Length: 73
Image (tube, rainbow, N blue to C red; front, side, top):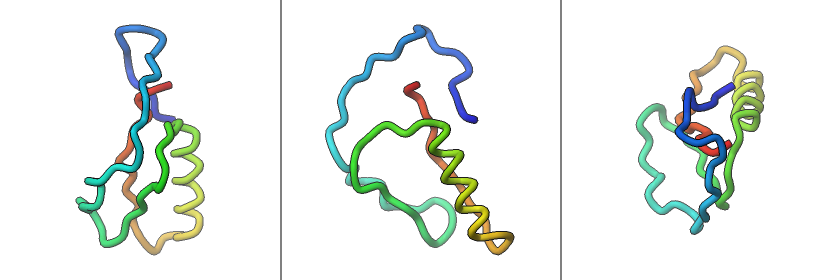
């Protein structure tokens, strides 16, 4: 699972989420993409579950790139 190697402080400040990102529509790899429609934090377990479900559905027909990282624990 993904997690930061080291952080300066053990507990992260929560901050706030403003809404949907307006600039996440350019794809760097591939022809199709998924964009979220609401704002929330995503955990490494959720990323791993989505990756496993997508690879099982695709079997060996394509490639999957995941370009997000769970910075906030």
